[in-house]
Image (tube, rainbow, N blue to C red; front, side, top):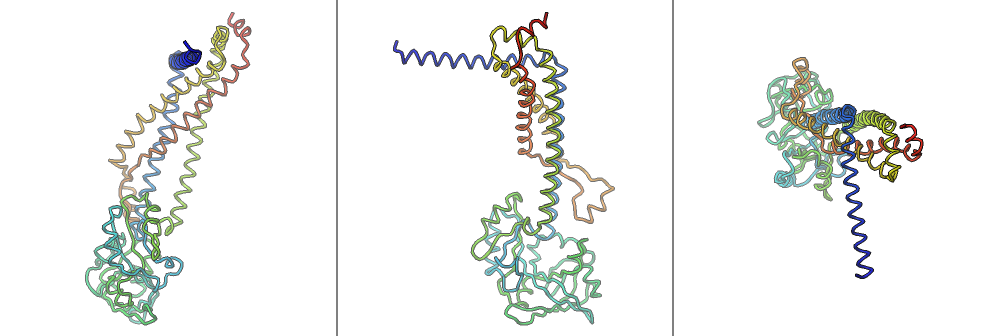
Length: 423
């Protein structure tokens, strides 16, 4: 047999020996856990309870924010809008999107988009009799429009026919008009001319949002385009997406040289910042729970080191290296973490999944509030795989740290002293 072959055989035998050693240490560590079943179950239950809190709180939070985002975007803004590149900074009449009909048809054929609403807007003077007030006229397509405002009529109905107006309740009150009355709209048409419309109020709406109720008047898009000389142009195309989480990606994909995609985060920065702030505060709660669990495991392993000091001394006397003993304790910590995580997901996943289907009722006490703010009567938690995975990784790392800190005492362990103490 050649020396090279002999060397390969020795290396292979050593590798097999190391694998067998690791397997035996893992098995011994598993048996060691059950030498004190009460302590093991208490530590696993602590990890499981912390995990249940983290997963459940996050599921409620994600469900709440999804509800908030869906309610806010459906209110008027949409998940995103297609606009002229300069319209956001300067909402002027000439900053419009050309060939609107073709663009709307193309967007409606996109599987990632669930609703398309073309809109044109202009600041106008609304008059009735001797009363006049500044307002924002919004030209909408009554068939395509998804804004929740259309369902907030306090009197009358939404737009359906020609020369009709759907007016905010406060603006209607200021003008002294109601359903059936006429409103004259004057504004600046594209190109500098005067745009004029005589409209019949067919409905008034109240959203609870003062900016909308006192300033908006909706008219049919075709009549708006004709009066303001827009032709086949609009100022924004609002979109609802099949996957709201893909807003930024879709906004970047739909923009071109003539238009830009504006996400709801850009349109509603206050809501976006509020959600981010809430997430940060929740992460602090998660961190506190992990620290508490880590301290409890550190305490348990400190007790283990003291109780099993004679055992560790005997193992060292028999030739077991301190690194192998540390490895055994690391395996015990790993098994402990896996037990706790198994308890977490065994309880949390079915519970959150059930609640995500049945929902959590707000109750009769909040019925008036949910109706006022156009909220559904149930909250649907949403299980976050990412949060569950992050918690699992953090707990695995924390338990290894918890095992390593007290185990460092083993490096200073003297065999003679431990055996004498045993006597």
